[in-house]
Amino acid sequence: MPGFEFFGAEERKEVNDVLQTGILMRYGFDGARNGIWKSKELEGAICETFGCKYAQLVNSGTAALTAAMTSLGIGYGDEVILPAFTFVASFEAVLSVGAIPVLVDVDDTLTLSPAAVRNAITPQTKCIMPVHMCGSMADMDELVAICKEFDLLLLEDACQSIGASYKGKKLGTIGDAGTFSFDFVKTITCAEGGVVMTNREDVFLSSDGYSDHGHDHKGTDRGADLHPFIGYNFRISELHAAVGLAQINKLDTFLSIQRKNNKTLRNILSAIPEISFRRVPDEAGDSCTFLSWFLPTPEITKAVVDEMRAQGIMPGNFYWFDNNWHYISRWDHLKNSVTLNKLHPDLKAAVIHHANKDFSASDAVMSRCVSTLISLLWTDEQIQEKGTQMVTVIKKVLVEHAVTY
Ligand SMILES: *Cc1c(COP(=O)(O)O)cnc(C)c1O
Image (cartoon, rainbow, N blue to C red; front, side, top):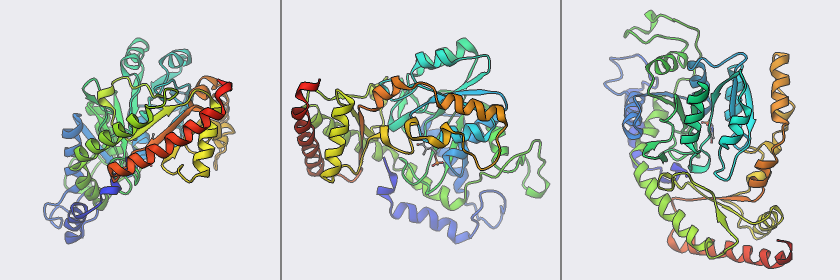
C-alpha cells in the first residue's frame, strides 16, 4: 500500500519547483509563483486519473470527509450509516459536522453489509458511507440501489482504496462524493493530504469554499473574495501537493506491483484448504494493497496470530479484531462518547446507543480475519520466504486444533 516506499528524485523535483519560488500557499501570489500551481495541477491529474468531474484537495482524508459531508448538507439530527470496521476518522468526521454516526455490521467483504444498512434506515437517515477498506470494495450496486430507494446520499470513504474500481468505475467516484487520504501510509502520499471527488458542481463549489474559510475564489484578489457561507481552513500546501503530483504519476506502477505481489502470496497461502479469502465484489478492481484471509474459527485465528507474534513475523500482518484504531471492539472512547468539549445531550446519547449495539455478526467475520500488507519493495524470494513462514505457523496451529473444528 504505501507510496512512501517509492519516494525519490521525482518527488524532490516537484518540491524543488515550489522551493524555487518560495510560494508555499496554493492560492494567490499569482505573479510571484511564476506559473507553479502544484495543487491545481494535482487536482487536474486526479480528475483525469480517476474519472471525476471535480476534485478539491484538502490537508487530510479526515478533512475531506468533513468537507464532503458539510457540502452535502449533512448536519444536526442527520444519521450517517457507516461500518463498524473502519478507521476512527470516519466517525470523527460525522461527529465534526454534528451528525449521528450509526455503526452497522460488515460482512465477508470487510465492508458494509447491505442487509445491515437496510435494517438501520430510519426517517433521520441522510447518508450511507461505505468504507472501502484495505484496498477493496463494498457491494456498490446494492448500496446504490438502497440510496435510490430511500433517497439517501452516498459518500464513499475510499481513503484506503486509491486506484481500485468497481465495474469499471474508480472507487470514490460512484457516489455523490468520495474521498481519498494521502497521509503517509496510503497508496499515494503527500505526507498529509486528502481530496474530495465529485461529479456534482454544487458539492465541489461548497468544498472549495468550505476548505478555505468560505472564500468564493471568484477573482484574483483574495482580499476582495466574498464569503457566501462560513467555512474552515483545511487547505493543503503547495509542498504537500508537489509530493502527491510525483506520486500520482507512479500509481500505475504501484498498482501493478501490488497486484503481482498479492497474487504470489495468495497462491502460497492457497495451499492450505482451511484458508479462505475476503469476498471481493469485483475481483478485477481490487487494488491489492492487502491480502485479507480467514481461518475457520476465532480460536485458531487467535492462536495463529499469537504464534506469528512469538516468531516475530507479525509485523505487516493486521489482526483488526484486537486493533485499537480500526474496529468497534476497542473503541471505548466512542462507546462512552468521551469528548473534550460538551456534545448536545441528544447527540451524546445517540452516539453511545449506536456504538453499543450488537456487532456479533461483524465479530464473527473480524475475529477470523488477518490482513497482510503488500509491500512494493518485496522481491519474489522475500514473498516466498514470508509465505512459507506463514504457512508453517498456520499448519502447526491447525494440527494442534484438529479436533476443535
Ligand atoms: C486514512 C484514513 C482516513 C483519514 O485519513 P487522514 O488523511 O489520515 O486524515 C479516513 N478513512 C479511512 C478508511 C482511512 O484509512
